[in-house]
Image (tube, rainbow, N blue to C red):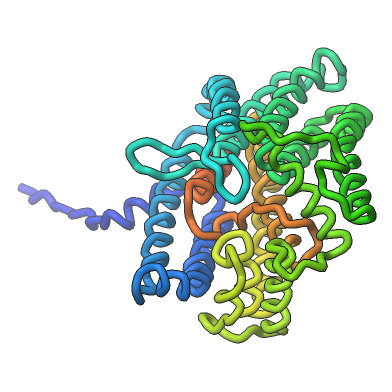
Length: 422
């Protein structure tokens, strides 16, 4: 009588089980982890003095907060990438419709911070959320859905282009009064996606021409204001309302004027930020002053947020800054690779649209730091200090990885069928 042989399977640890279920583009996963590690180092360095001042010598407070946001963010990435990306097509229209009243509410009743009403306060957890982050995510889901359904008529102005561009226009118009830079970057990302989605070039150019009209007026107002030396209310017929819809006009014109001409005012906040960022970059040189050795962090406002790239350049030099740029470019390249491999239009447009907005936001943030673009207030994705914006960025990356996971599965099935046929 033969004795049964009991072969025990090796027990897999919970972490190993989690890793085994992690699918999608491994390079994007690696880049995401690399950026959050950079974030830990940069945020800890940039907030050291601030934490010491606000928390009576405890310099690790913001570090622990950033670690918490990173852990939550990575969980969001993992959870989102496990969901089949077709689910996002199903909720795209509902989510987009819900964001419209949310943006309107933010515009009139939002929490005012940094001279703009961009946030709403979330109940129970007492955190503020920038509703434009949710609106961007919802818009790209809906835009990818529309583009995939209207490929046959996309070149027709009435049947194809208008139904696609109207949601983009509505979202950008609702975001613009409180956050013009985000609206412009979002519009640029959407137009790039429309171009790749085979929309007619003349339709896209007409849209750009229409959107350029207020920008031309803005630049003209800045030029006239600088030459006349008058207050903005005497240059343009803009009156601030209690709701603050047009309250940012003076800020927009001031930023454009400062970017073109600089400022003679010693206490100009925006030029002070730009000048301090330049000092940080100059201090960094080629190789930087070393991790944690930044001195400009004590003088640069928003060093841990909008201007965190300046701290990276100071501590890690031109080499470190170039490496960050390289990471974002590789991220965009891998997302374009997913777009080319994805056999279904919705997934392809969704991955590309989300990657465009993240890459353009990163480029805009870094361009502001080196004074190639007016001050905007946009964060550096995955690197700036955590918040709801960090969580929404992680959700966008999770959705991209969901598309990549589906592409990976289809490639595996195709290879299996090919092996069986041979």
